[in-house]
Length: 314
Image (cartoon, rainbow, N blue to C red; front, side, top):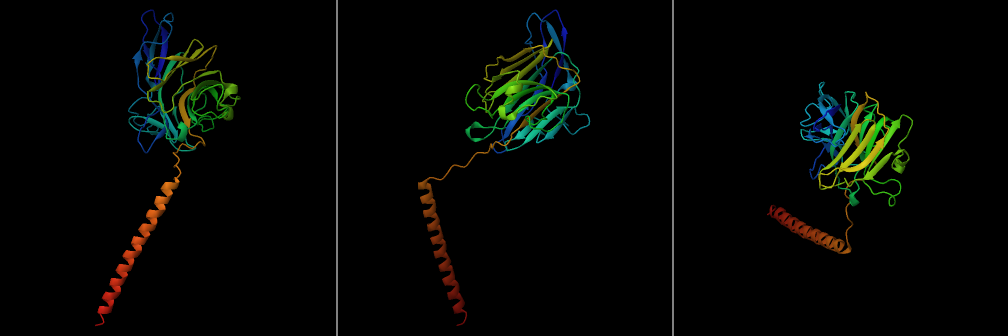
């Protein structure tokens, strides 16, 4: 991740994005279900023109390529957990398999008041009917490196959770379309109800077609002056669309950034199709013919062996 400190500035807006990577891998066999990639960008801020802010990159909160030593080196600022793995190009959180959890967590507590976070991620899988995993989450929480049922993190967390939920567990048809992005603030006693997709504790959300997308998919999370905004760019137009805008949010400092994902119990493996009646008939026919040919060859070989053996006695 790349953190930015914001200060008043009476000139043109500039922003160093605060970026959270996760991973991307398109190998045909070793498919990833959930991943995010990161890069450090400088471009115009999404802040209102009236806000006049300049942002400064905080490298101690950065996670960017080539990820050398990530999770293993004592000098690394990030830890890996669960099925998360790292290459020079990406950090993969979970593979395309059942019941997997993976995460990456910052080792350095975050003491910036106003910040922006850009997440470039991919959610892919070969599951039938496009069912991939449970989802992924971006965190700013008091506790870190805790396994649990909330997209690979603990329940009853303290802090901010932003979820990209890829599968509807409650109503599968009515008031919302999945994948769905939602926001939750935890105080240590609130529980995320997985069976109801966290609806009871959700502060806001939107549909974002991020699963198996042919375009790069992005989230932008911005916290400034007790205002939390989440925007998405998932349709290849390079335009941010509003998702969540909440006033009066108070996030303490000293918490940790992280990203986690889980595939849950939903099978994401491609199921083999059944054999039709015609296929079964020809399979059986060729099997019988093959056995017949093998039997004839065996009889011929046995006959020649017997004849050669008989000749030895003359």
